[in-house]
Image (cartoon, rainbow, N blue to C red; front, side, top):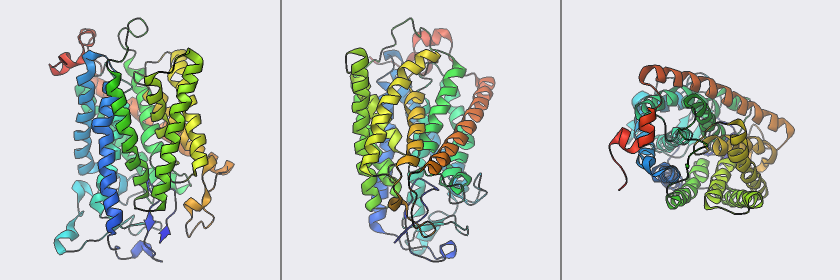
Length: 448
């Protein structure tokens, strides 16, 4: 068994040994790999519904809880259809280094072999010079990647909680998925993507998911402006019990997110699971200690926010670093994201409601950069690179380049899309609706 080049997509998967993989026949399905990927797909979906929905829902005020839950649930439904129709094709079909083609629109060709009695894997980037041979059915890989496409725009919603129109959210979600998420995912995770081509490594989505969502969230918070009463009224969370349950579901689901990104039941999946657990615990404790030292009290909201920061920061590194590196990444994430979500936000005056940028943007940037510092060569050995990708200043610079292009594309296109949506349907609810609460104003329901 061989590992392919550890840069281009969220897996660095186990490969079938084939000297001419670009034109090799599809491999047989490995039932162990497939079982793990089916499980991982369900775990990642659980991260959004109910995990993220409860995490965000518990942190808003009572009058906006149902609207916040609705956002995560609706985004799950919307992206499922968008991914089926065009998102998967634009991200993973063969095209240019910048975007996929339309050969997989409506999931064309996926599963056709089943009717012929064949249970085979597939080759991602068939015919290219750098293909990825899969030992799972393409339908399973498509579904696994769908869950990543679902959670990313759902994360953005935390930045503009309490104030965006539901109609605007729906339109923005469709456009952003196709014009921001799909191109960046193709750059990083497609075998022919141009960011993968210059050597950037991202195991499970530091750039594609977290920096992408964090930067989009920051832009959205700036465009929409502050919540009514920000800085003068009590905007405390309604129910931290919901938030703790949501954070716990995120933590458990993240094993599918990170260990599942090995795209196989193998040693790399085991290491990714271990590093995820270590970094998450370290970040939760790092945030808790920093908050305790600064304010005199460790809070429930703080420790769960720290845990999520650790999950975010280890994501790009999970399958490429050893436990010691994971510990360092987690501790750094807990402390740095704490100050980003408190001091930085208040100093700059933007209203990132649920700290989408402070946790996902800052944590994703930190994790992507530190991957270049702590990457352990033997975890990323390939035929083309027998020494593997080891932490070095050169790799750090490559990681910084990947971070930079992600930030620029996401910020510019997100800003343009928000302005277009504002012209089309309007972005923000009225002051009266915001005062009444989005549950009643937008959905005609309330928590009794």
